[in-house]
Length: 357
Image (cartoon, rainbow, N blue to C red; front, top):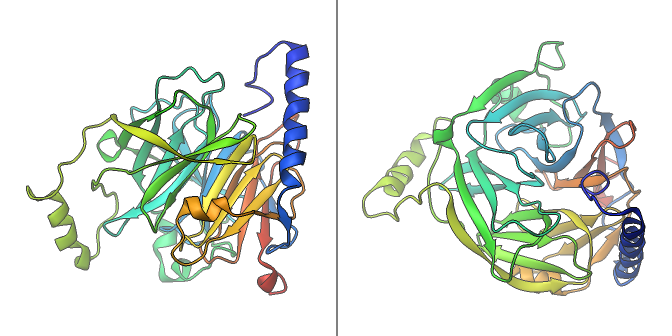
């Protein structure tokens, strides 16, 4: 978060803002302007919603046609499930978890199970000895379990409780179904608001925020298995292997993992990032711009991001801190925090080849 959480003297604050805006404009000018995506259109507005500081977003796999999001610091430890018209359908609380400075949410799959990674990675003054991630099996909304709902693409809006005028679902993820890891940067504390999990190299990537040229860090997540939803029959043997004495032992809660610096990127004030479901495309954004990479076959994330980015059309939101690819790959969504009472829109930018469909 930028406006509320940055507590500086007014003169220094103004200088910092000017420096940030200048840096954004400079680094945006180094990107190629060749749009893969069209101009974003509003799909809906968050109305009378507890989501007032959206600071992360990812497309749901268990609930096609839905998106997960959460608030910035100061909120309870909870995540929200909205549809692609910005209507709230469910709220899930994380038992025993403190939401210190939640900034990002991502998706990964291990052993055929879909997981959400919630990044408590904000550190405005770079004073936290470690930040953390909380990993949970992705909850499945009952209304989305039907064949009709499951057939919906991520660019349509399913019918659920909120559409029927019913109260959105509320539930709690028990502590037994939450895996927490502490993360430490190898070169000292950093502020960050962007992370994603690469399905190809199976590494978690964190992009820092406040440097004039931000850092790209990576860490491997230890093997484990948690499940909220019944596993299909063909997964039973795989899950049994994961839990067998011969398998790697399950890590204890709050294990500490080391974030290794992999690259320096020519951007500043990065607020969000996402990788496509296949891992072939990457999006990174700050408050003023959206940058895109088409990852070539065989490239690592570091190699892909070392190439020049492609600047996409983007009309700055009041405080845009969330971006997410749609599951079907036809575009991406953005969401903003609420600033000065302005309406919060869920925007969708379609790929040019799908923009007329």
